[in-house]
Length: 216
Ligand SMILES: [Zn+2]
Image (cartoon, rainbow, N blue to C red; front, side, top):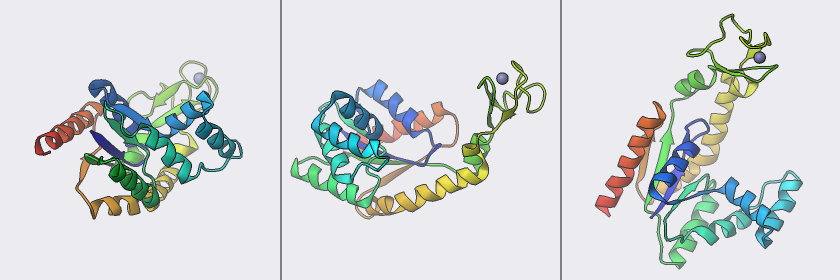
């Protein structure tokens, strides 16, 4: 079974993928993890990729695709996380799967409500001095903006401020909307609303996969 997981930053996709991998034994293929593993192993592809990463460049699609191809026919099944990111990658994946007589069993898109995401992320704060994390809604410091432990200043990271979150969401949508359109025009994309507790999202995810098994 091959499953493609898509979703914006903050949707908890990576966490859900790891959990699903643990409970099903499917291999979790995250492009970032694979890149690091190939680099660490000193493989030919890893060395090529490292050259780009060391220069601060994106690793080209052709290298990423070659790495994914090494793992795509794992008999335990694979969960693709963070790939494909472009229409070119999606087409290449379809082509190489076709050549191998394989297919994608399920495409799952985690969706989040931007306002809900902003509420969730912008409640995360951290002490600038001792790095103790706080949640301004459920676990706020006793005195506003002051760390309980060291008296340092507690604030929301710039990354988690509403403007930065909106920016990240816009970038994500611009980049992935074409990939979603590509898939939607060819096969069913299962939508999972990733708002709610990690447990309830995981429940929806496993249900979606089970229903796929029944209909196949
Ligand atoms: Zn502190």
